Length: 423
Ligand code: ADP
Ligand code: MG
Image (cartoon, rainbow, N blue to C red; front, side, top):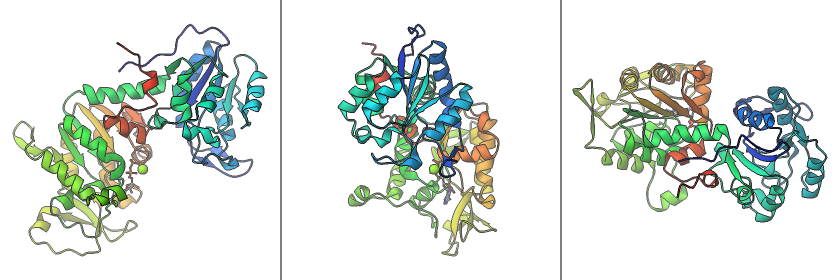
């Protein structure tokens, strides 16, 4: 998959509409709102500087939160302009207008080479609806379109798919890097490919896991997601967390335990040899867990799940909240022999120190594995950040839903207009 690169010979004064993702966390109120995490801003800098070096005028378009087509002052991008200006070490002018003619006047009044951040694009009704009129009007402000918002690439919104209909469209450097990292993982990963999934939300991940399970050598399952696999394999998971199935799944009489069962069944005959002689199943879920009566418990107990199958009586009040020591050992061994690791989802309820051990150990093993490592997921990133390991991975994907949609083999609407047609 080849994406169209931003030209390096733009005429000075070229107006570039750049779709960025500045959907960042904010804190404070009234005139004292500030950005608490600038990672997304930092990731766009290479593209912005590349355009600025060519004396382009930049018109930045982003969404923030879910204002549902209405002006919501608390979701204004104004504080973002300030934070961006600091990072760029150059002025960023914020355009507060939400009427098209006013936006035109504002942009016209700025000097060549200015960096202008438009107000939250989701204040406009036409954004989510992909209104062609809005796209056409906005596009007429500029000469080229650059997409630097991979995390919104699964959305068919005006700023993702409408604008590139009217302007020559290019991929921003960050978007390109992310697509290339994920594409490489899906098409020619260095083997063995080890996929690790965890966390609470199996709904987000199940399609990617189904796809990746086909190409992976081993899938390690931890966190709340593992409960579905344990239940599918006949273990008693007591009071452990299970995500409820969405209505359309329920209508078909299915839940996530059924999906886990299907996956186990599909891969039942596949075996991977550890140390060249120990056969392991392709999908591995915990053999032991840390359990407690609540997420905030200060104490935990190890439960050996194979004992449980041998008529172990356990308290119905227990929740499985982290992977146990034996599972950690096995997962680490597998990870250390990997050629590529993709990891999404913490191994336990890591926010409580008592259940953070599995996630810590897995994070450390992935970091030192020597494999090509890609991690994703908001909470997974938060966990590795906490451990100071974030810069030890080859690629940290902040794209959440878009990355998972890409990894489930879908063509993303926001990427399509950026692909070089090789026909
Ligand atoms: P990510 O954001 O990395 O994709 P998720 O949002 O799916 O991950 O899940 C993260 C959450 O999962 C964390 O808040 C963590 O506490 C929770 N979690 C992990 N393991 C368990 C478990 N065994 N039981 C309940 N919650 C869990
Ligand atoms: Mg999350």
